[in-house]
Amino acid sequence: MKLFRLVFILLLIHFSLPAQAETKKAASETSASTSNLEVIRSLSETIQSLSETIRVLSESARSSAKTETLPLASDKKGLTFQGEFDEDFMPLRLDFNLPKFKTGKMGYQIDVQDMAFHFQADSHNPHHLALSNGYFKVGYFNFNLSLLGLKTTLDKLDVTSSSQLQGNSVHYSLHTQLGRLFVPKAILGEKDLDLSFESQVDIRNLEATALLALQNIGRELGRQVQGGATSDEEIETRLTTKLKEVMPLLLANSPEINIPTWKLSTPAGEFQGNASVKVDGSQSGSIKFDDESELGNGLLEVLQVQAEVSIGKELLNEMLLLEMEDEEEVAAQVHAWVEQKFLVEADENSYSAVISLQDGKLIINGMVEDLRQPSLEDEVKQAVDLLLGLQIPAAEYYAAKGTFPTLAEIEGKTSDEYVASVVSNPEQFYFQATLKEELEGVEPEIAGKTLRLTFDHEGNSWVCGPGEPDGIDRQYLPENCQ
Figure 1 (cartoon, helix red, strand yellow):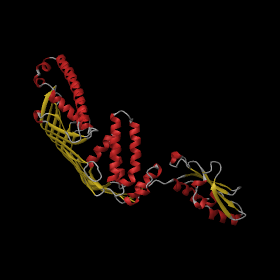
Figure 2 (cartoon, rainbow, N blue to C red):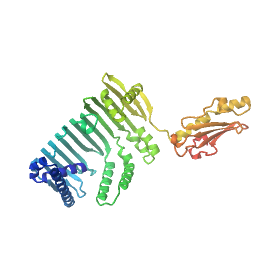
Figure 3 (spheres, rainbow, N blue to C red):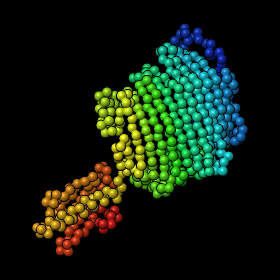
């Protein structure tokens, strides 16, 4: 909404300036110094108008009732704007229409046709949840820097959003269609930006009570910001805390995101596909949202993702060049992805991929990767299993030769994914494992700690526990090593 308010205020200022300003072209054409003075004078008037407009808007909004219409602009040149705001200056309804706007000053021209914005918020429902519907449309926009011959155009932008409440579930929908956007390379850099785009996004089954809690904390923080009573850090902390608190409830109705279509078209090719993301709400209560080390694994367990994408080869190369800036490096990267089957050739001009995520496993074109990070218990268990795997060959060696073996004599492993080293002490009859450091991916509570497996040759038994020095805390040991 801040962006819209700024756009509206600037348009309001333009229409409030004296009409004679559009006819004063002689000065700018005859003298560079006069042109500079005109720019300074125009900026000064603009700043003054902006300050006055903000003051009027603020005072009017604070004094208006929830249901009163607040007319903020006249219909000069076809521009109309009406709004309703509540006591917190939150919009209840906004209607903006600009059928046609054309101007040219100081070496530039702007042409806008059929620009419209509508926003409607309604909280008259059993949950008193603010639900909004609206659209933003631009039939045509042209910005031309005539002195440099640079022309940016936009044709037929249409963004429509809607929300509805069914029972205790909230559904949202967003449709975006862009006929064409063209920005010359002189503005962006290497290449012209020339594209069209269309997408549909549907979000379903968000729990209404949880959404209301988030809306309430947002409104409360908004009032505090207006009164200067809070900082950015406090806002972030309170929002994060509230989000963690309501997240299990927010996911309880098994929400899902469906993208039946998206399509980006450029002269270099197309990037298109579809996707769906689902959450198993029946398991959301088991996710530890306060434990960052476990949160990722918890979310992966309840997420299901399906997607199909295709992208033009030339378009992919252009996108990668924005990051790598070297054609050989780009070619090597694409080749590696094809070799790894992350991309397959759909035809001579495009690549494709079929992607799914289920039970924590990411599958791309049949290639499987487990995304779940090992827990602290998994890391300790690996070290314990490595030691326990030495029991039988060591006992057999002792029975045959009467001495405790070295690792080499029984071909034992000396390291593993989370184990930095394993050593043998034949004199004291033990094997000892040292876990890797935190920088190598081991949890800080156990990084660098030791575990020991000792052989009681008199009783022909084994004892598993912390090593020396830096023995691991017993609370992290599994039952088979206590």
